[in-house]
Length: 219
Image (cartoon, rainbow, N blue to C red; front, side, top):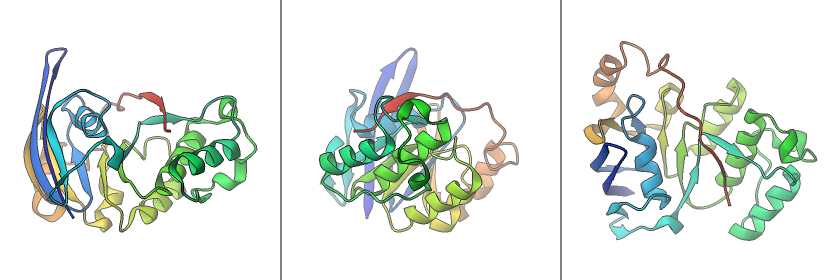
């Protein structure tokens, strides 16, 4: 399915002017401050931005997406089980206890580590039929959860802003290389690999400063 974006946002001396189109899932790559997270939040309707988003040729709105921040949280007074039940009711879906969350269903949000909370919120999001906007989804996940997440994303429409694209490559995502708020290049990983590696100093965008964590709830 084709995704087209034309996004405009100006604030704090930064200008986002992102025009790009691709088919299927995509990775937003680029250094810190390039505009990856801003673009995702514009797509999710969290920022008031100019422009538009189209999916399959039709106008899309924030109702078509679920945005997952880099450091998602579960409400502190709810148990994981209560939170997942709440998500099930709100989204009218059957939330599956994937990513190992069945091991701590009785824990409250206040008792969860950052990694546990990320697994819970991602499990809830993956149970929905919405397109997913994932902001640094691997940040707090251990290796086994990272691999399970990538397996669960197969066949899904998603856009992931990440500093570590390597695990996503088997899903054959499009790559949008963002630089200073603009699409410097758009294409397949195979066609852009050399460019990405060169811009990241010979690494798979790993080893840069840790991306800024943004706390937030989903649903």
